[in-house]
Length: 429
Image 1 (cartoon, rainbow, N blue to C red):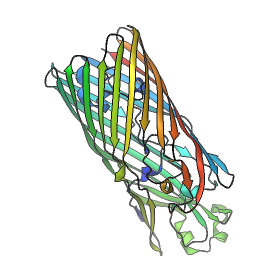
Image 2: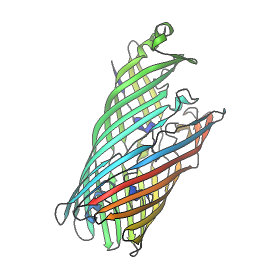
Image 3: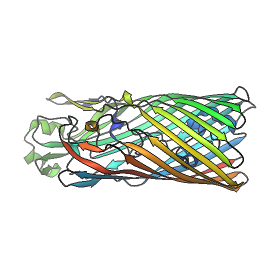
């Protein structure tokens, strides 16, 4: 039996990154140290292959870069009924890798291998707001070949194509949407897909020590296939498992739901536009800035439709009502020695949640403040090591409602913080 699960944003229900929505900004350990101010156009590494392909023209010869940013979450929830919960997940590393090669005097080619969207949150199966989410795992891998063309000493252009793999797993109470049934059903959707998108960028250098970048990355539409599974039914406070299935499930609707079913899922990752600037003030100091817009308003509803033998099609709708988000960051590099650079940055990123009643436990999004520090070490003539750390602090409204009707405030997230540590190496041939 095929279940058709039409999802306007399955992975909009989950995020381990605690960035706006489920987007991962963390594609460079060097840029992490200044809260991604000037990402790409800074020229301190070759992560511009992802952020803005035009900036490859800053890097002569052939270079490779590899590293990761590890993320830990602290999502401390306190319910009005006295219950407490924390959506901590195990610390997850976000890997990335780049290759940049100067093919001719004016042409560069490169490859970015990144995880641009992802998540990983988990609560106890029996916590009081399981209807607002139990667990979610979302992962994307993006393979992004790019080309850059240096039109003149002042202008460079770049473009690329993304081939993206996405895998999503979402578990929540009443995911099956059987509101007419007496038991509570824990449902889980697991699906994956390959899809493609594109990216373009430009860089303008009006004077030797000043650079501006503008880049765009398209939406990627996934049409995934996988499974819809019901392996835990609850009647009141009693769990119904395979051992007591025969005696407990006299309801034919429940019998039809039990087990694993084919699923088809449609999901999308949003487009974004980023403007960056870099100013090399002198041999010691450089200043950077970033402004990024992300099209999260394209996520309106999560619609799930699946067919049960003898029961017809059962709809389930989760209204997201997300809004576009913005990241603004400022940063600086201090080059104390030829072999040692220190950096710092501050940023502010707005939440994708437009109204508190649409906030879920799996992604309790809120506005956040970025504070970051980092350092680069020139270990050898052609080898650079970067280490950075950042703290993301959730601020502003953080209430959680029992449902998306907004009638009953269930509690509040006292803490919405993320801790990031990035390490990478850059080698020049």
